[in-house]
Image (tube, rainbow, N blue to C red; front, side, top):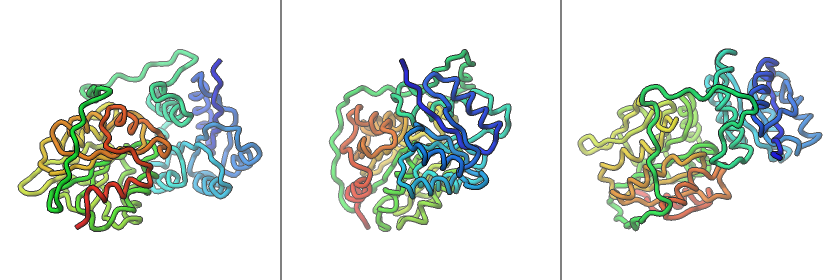
Length: 374
């Protein structure tokens, strides 16, 4: 018999506690075993029994003790808790969300703007999928398992999704060719769940005179990636910015794909230029790393360093597979034990595409070693 995962909801809204409880209890894998109306109440419950809860859903803006204060106290006590941020102010207060991810939150889900939207399938499935991933269910079993009949996910309208390009379990990996100091180089990185925190252990460790521009696709909705880029810029020697349409790629600059948009690279004259487009999501992702990698197929970079960090799913693998067929690439994957979710790096590894799988703390040095400095 399936042992249900115990969930704690921390939210000052009685209505939202009820909505979240109904969503979670509708899935046979979970049960809401406790609720709290603020961080202080939750803190008292957790310190009495730290192992009671498998996953915690945390609001940000609450009286007595808000979400950030709660996480700071949990960290002070060195408690290892799995926390998902669920808050209405997550878009407007993106800085607070990024801060909570820095403090160790697993991931975040944004609340809808109205009660009617909260009852829709999209929010319900977002909550349950994130919960399943956080609770450690198999990567192929993250969709909801409802005890009661529920509407199916809405079908995509028009061409909102594109089928995943199939990748064989093993492929013939082209050997990476070392290039000279004057060669043209690019770094292209993909990450998802756990990515914001992981990026803080990679980007700030890169040297200011990195001999290549760097692209990052971090799965995030609109409104978050500018804050993420600004935070990384504060911590780093390299310059970090949210990608803007028409940006010319410069060495020593990191461009974070804009949430809610797709990112492509094209050559204009002697320069490479970014295109930030409103084209549809692929496999429900916008930005999508596969699209970013595929846009590099016709480039004439002498060397492209592809990096895949923590994240759910397999985004990036199909695009890197295509690059392997046409371009000189060096591929770095994050080793399993340091991943929040070993989905995207695992797909890369199982496809036979990785040159090396490294612990997170070694990724920046590997990038620098392959790219070099000016």
